[in-house]
Image (cartoon, rainbow over all chains, first blue to last red; front, side, top):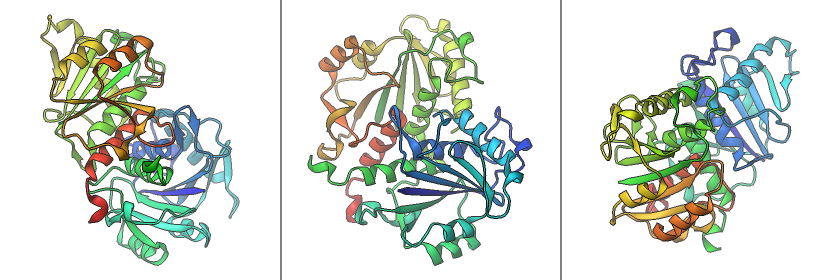
Length: 197
Length: 197
């Protein structure tokens, strides 16, 4: 299982503020849509053993690869899935998430609660342009990568990551968009020993 | 200079058939939009030394990184740039492309003419899931990667690639979407020696 936690700093939880005709205008929801795409899609296939947590304005939208049925690669339809999940946020009761679409869950939460809930057996890895080169780290069997959208992590978020993250890793010498970093991280994990084939 | 040639097999050149509300319905134009995104975007920056050729229905839409001014990361706005370029295709006269937006050109062409025009000094590399692992190849200084959209290359295209491509390269053991393959190819070229930092 590979997990990705992506913090969307400006996406509104209020679904009615999200227009599918203007995903960038919805707090750069387009960035999160592309992260979901990169996390799950293979050519003509889906990565089933992947979980994505989108941290958005006091809520967390969770995607379960093994259960997803209505995810398509394009930004707009993914934006609709996220919007509809946020629209169902009031149906979450306490720790019980709502499940508005197969494999899509929504509940109250933030970065702290998400990191707490990852479980002890996961290796929490902050993806950050100033981190250690990914090529130098061992490939963990249960990584949980934490990324930010187009903004840097806040100080409070950095403090949480200081506490929970095992390491800070960079996927290359050039700073990448979050979705591109997810693609490279997947590829690094995929290619264990691949150069020797 | 890094170049990417992407063949869109079903995108219509007739711009009026393209709806920004349904990019997948426009012959999977969403795939090409994501390829343009992956080819050019860095975090808060653009890769200036990149050229992208989208081969579409008898026309080629060319993006020049050093000249682009109106490219945004989201799919919809990139779709609008491509649609508007195709709408201007009749303004191209003979070998003289039209230039409907800074850094965006359109002219008649196909995969054959695009490969011919790349120039002798470029190393043409077919990205293909059955190719040799990218980690085993030397990093060329002027690569031109050729990719297909969600469909395989046709037999005629394979024949052209047989003639022009120096090598057939795979970016990993799992078959990726074209845009993800571009991200990984960029990363491989970016990280020359990076593991030793």
